[in-house]
Amino acid sequence: MRIAEVFHSIQGEGEFAGTPSVFVRTTGCNLRCWFCDTPYTSFRAEGPIRDWRDVLSEVLAVDCAHVVLTGGEPLLQPEIVPLAEALRREGRVVTVETAGTVFRPVESDLMSISPKLSNSTPLTSARWRERHDRDRDQPHVIRQLMNASRFQLKFVVDQPADLDEIVRYLARFPEVPRECVWLMPQGTQQSDLVEKAIWLAPAAARLGHRFCPRMQIELFGSVRGT
Image 1: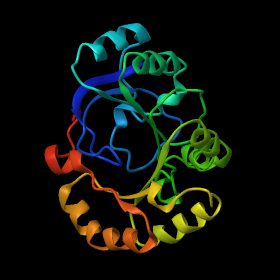
Image 2 (image 1 turned 90 degrees about the vertical axis):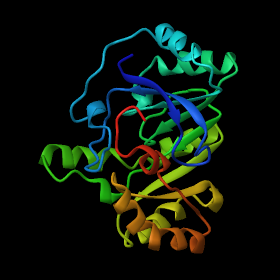
Image 3 (image 1 turned 120 degrees about the horizontal axis):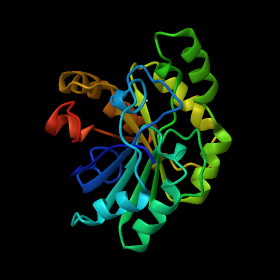
């Protein structure tokens, strides 16, 4: 499996926000969101090929109960399946962060699914715009992932108009409890997040969803390995 980085930090988003965690960040993504905050896993892919057992050993060497398998798109990597299984067998609490476009029978304690809205379409490269918009919405995959594990849905919100699209999106999934949906401001600067939180936090409450601050940016800024 191709790995961009393994690091110890805190989970900044969703249900486990604030929880010390070991992050395994894979390289490779089938989407090209213009606001991607880890371009070294997609636009400018980097990182060595490693055996999953080697990655497992590195993670287990850290005295930390929670592990986050993220990317890129971690479910593009076949070896994510035995890695997650081994981590849970060792008693680790595993979160898988995915855009919900690829299904693998991966074990997890929390499937953190971040469906990509139309606001994610790349601004350059007609080829990638077409491919991204074709692949970003896979409702059958979303259902497979939700049926396989406890889950949360996490949406990146850039403008107030995005809220209408989220309402339409969720209408296709009436089985999803409102409190399992997190709304997260788009931005890599603290000032952007604060500005958007002013209107997004009350909007989330009004819709019965949860507001998702990006704690890692609040604490560390947009810095790799945090």
